[in-house]
Amino acid sequence: MPLHLLESRFPERFPATHLAERHPNGLLALGGDLRPARLLAAYRHGIFPWFSEGEPPLWWAPDPRCVLLPAEIHRSRRWLRWLRGCDWEISADRDFAAVIEGCAAPREPGGGTWIIPAMVDAYSELHRLGYAHSLEVRAEQRLIGGLYGVSIGGAFFAESMYSLRSEASKVALVALALQ
Image (cartoon, rainbow, N blue to C red):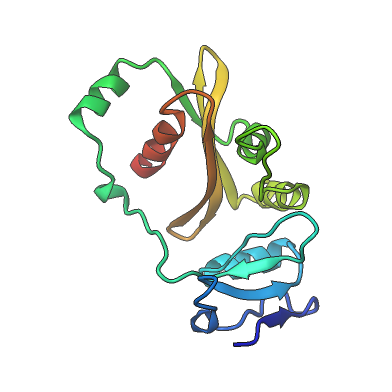
């Protein structure tokens, strides 16, 4: 199936998601830009950008998608006991820039990241417009993990999370589910 090329002059237009490639799973379109109008239109249709430095924007709509329903996130008794004894602080939208930088950092020396500077700029603009949000986890006032994503209507599209200490990103995810 031919890949759809997005036109710059129509940022809200995407092909129907059922036209996405099966291999690789969900590749739908290429091109366009990361302007807020395009990103928001994409998320409203279950589409997201994912590409590397030096590539044109690639747009994805995989089937099936991972959907986490807050009421169905399992938290073991042991983990909840651990959490009750934990003195970590959880905040929202207090340091979006630091969270996205933490998510963009390569996981291993010399490793790459899909959160390239253009993505950081685009999601920072969505944050400025009130669509992108972060959850931060701190220990002793030091950021140790978090997550960020896009909120539209009643849905939150988690983009990435990171942790500098074990369990920090899981704490952010559970805090998100409880909101």
